[in-house]
Image (tube, rainbow, N blue to C red; front, side, top):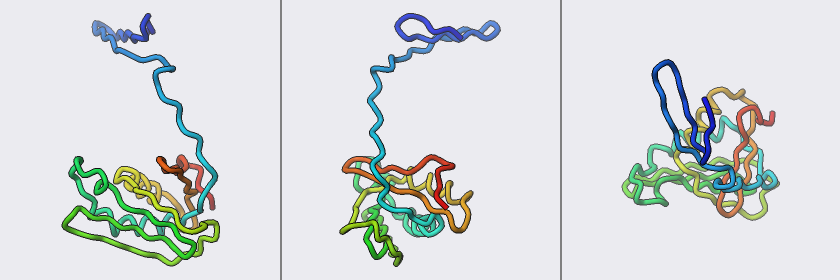
Amino acid sequence: MKLQENHWASLTCGRSRTRIAGMSRESFPELPVMPEVIADLPVKILATMIGRTIFAISMEESRFTLNGALLLLKPTGIVIVATDGHRLAMVETALDLPAIVGQYRALMPRKAMGEILKLAAEAGPDDAIQFSGDDNHLFLPPWGALAA
């Protein structure tokens, strides 16, 4: 494997030769910094709520707001609502979240919900996931960053 000028990569294996176009590091946008944690959410409870609402998310890509679920965090609990325009799923769980001031609303994409379900399958019963977000991003920790 060789890196050539103009960020092209040349791969040679036996008689096979391939060139792959690449991009410079400067061409990629900077990743946003994760803001302070909004809440520690119990993984198993969040996974159960996702499991009860993910079926109602639209698969049609042209309807952006229906391709995810509304996540609402309040000091008294969590609400998740999803719809595809025909079905509506809503689940609410009472939970003490004293760090939440007012309420936090975010549109959680289907893909992120699926990743949380995978994470929850390997989590213990008392594990929590640190959740934070800003106006345009949701931040969930990488695997191994669960808070017990």
